[in-house]
Image (cartoon, rainbow, N blue to C red):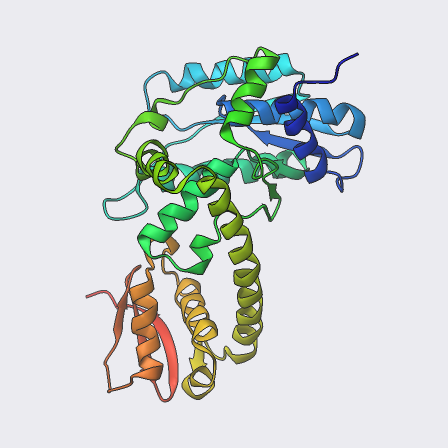
Length: 329
C-alpha cells in the first residue's frame, strides 16, 4: 500500500517530532485560521494524535477585522470538527490600536495570543501549536532587517516558547498548500494576505521574488537558517543579561559603575529590560530609546532625563539609572 503524499508526510513528521515529548493523554491545542498552514497543521495533529494518545482541541479567533469574519470562524469550526478534533473553541475579539503604535497586525496578534492563553488554561493543554512556516520566518527576518531591530528580531520567530510550538518552521508554504489539496481540504485565502497595505504582504509579493530573481533560488531557506543561527547567539546573550539584571537590580535601579563594566551587548539588554519592567510598551520601545538610556552611562554630561514611551523618563540619579513615570501635570 503506497504511503501518504510527500507533503502530507512532511507535515505529519514535523508534528510528530515537535510533540514527541508530550505525555499520552495530554491535550494539544491547534490554533487554526482556516488558511492552508494552520489547516494542514490541524490535519497532521489529528492524525498523529491517534498514535500518540493525545486529545486535540481546535481553536479559532474571529478578529472582526473584515466583513464575514464570523461566517469564516464558523466555517473553520466545521472543518476542525470534520477533521476529527476532540473539541472546538472559538472566540470573538475586538482589536484596538493607536496610530503610531503597533498597528492592526500587532494588535490582532496580541489579542489572538490572549485568547490562546485562555484556551490553553481552560483545556489544561500541554502545548499550543502554531502554523508558521519557513516562508513566514524569512519574511520576519527581512522585516527585522529593514527596521534595524537588532539581533533578537533578526533571529526571527522562536520554534518554541512558553506553551507554544511551531512545528512547520522547516516546511514551506507550498508544502502546506499541497498537503491541503491532497487531503481535499478547502483552505481559506485571507484577503489581508493580498493587501499591499501590510508590510509583510509587500515582502511576500514583491521583495522576496526580486531577491530570488537576482540572487537565485533558496533565499527564504537561507534567511531561515540565518535566523536559527542568530537565535542561539541571542538566547545566550539574553540568558547572561537576565543573570546580571537579577544580580544588579536594587531598589528599582541599576548602578552606573556596574553597567559601565559590562559589554555593550549586555548593558543595552539590561537597560531595555529596565524600561520594559517600568511599563514601556514593547512595540514602542525602539533602539534609539535604549541608546539614549545607554548614554546616561557611557556619555554622561549631566543630562536631565531621557523621554521614553509609556509616559516614562530614564534618569541618572546618584550613580544609579532609573526609569520613572512622568508626574501628571
